[in-house]
Length: 158
Image (cartoon, rainbow, N blue to C red; front, side, top):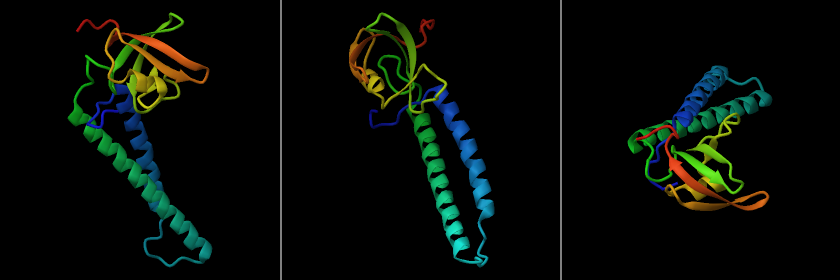
């Protein structure tokens, strides 16, 4: 990543929204189990109460991280169309001559085969590149290469 505010793709934004909804629901459930200053019945109850408090802290930290990332993305604006960055859509041709349009994102969805995270080997290789650039990156099978064909949606003429 560039170190400055990074845009996020629509898919990543949706992923954050779903995660926030899940985190808030879990937080509400956990917060409802805390004793509100009541005396614990025994050592086991005290341990359970501490674990719930730690869980609440973990949930609050993740909610704050996501909210901060969403604010940062709103400052960053739209993904660049000149160079590959987080939030970019990029069409590449792999060494085996197959072509694929990928989204560069932060949050990989297990069911989205076209999402490449910016911290993956291919994602890191693509960041900052332009159409026509060749990138090399590591795979479990060894080094590989791809050519950046275009940025933006393949049908987008802008």
